[in-house]
Image 1 (cartoon, rainbow, N blue to C red):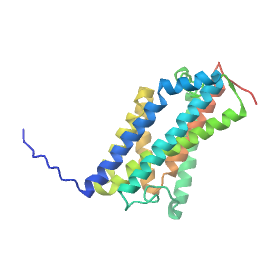
Image 2: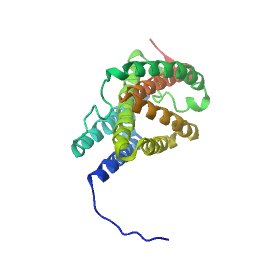
Image 3: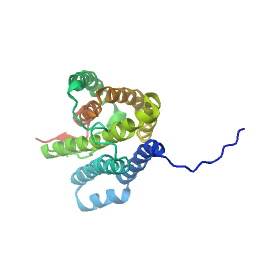
Image 4: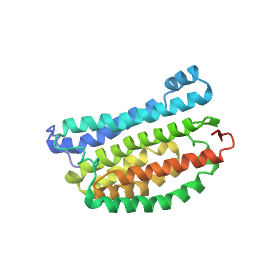
Length: 246
């Protein structure tokens, strides 16, 4: 076994590689443990009836996810890597790739919607979705649920496809950057079960490639929103203990 001397030298390149990975780990962990906090959950259920408590608690976790994964790590990243801009992190519109992005969004949505629609009926899926466990859904609940997913997934995709992926492309190359992205992305799905953890691997790979090809996060973000909305509202439709009151 070879012995290595510990080199404590810290370079700009080290920062550029390590910071996005650490930001993803730290801020996703902050979001996760906050969203699963029993104390926070109990505050809502102690104050409101069941349906309103579930609505307000889940929306709080979604909004907190938007801040903790979308805003806070971005601020840190831009402060400590000043050569990067929001456009560099994929938060931009690129005319040359706009048609490419639009076609992929439409194509993937057409593929995903029927697949998610039929899988959403599965009893295993109905145990977790819709996340808001209200028994009677109003128009306001439906809107708040949709808004919550929109905000949450913007923060989520900006963290994984913007902050984590794009800054690593130059110092590491495409394949190492994608591998790190898939590993962390798939790991975040472990609490949701084996199916979602395995499914996150090919999905993460495709979304990473499309982000690199388009130079923006919009394909990953919009496709993920379409997937979440379809799953949520299909699960709501088929859930035996829930009904919609329009």
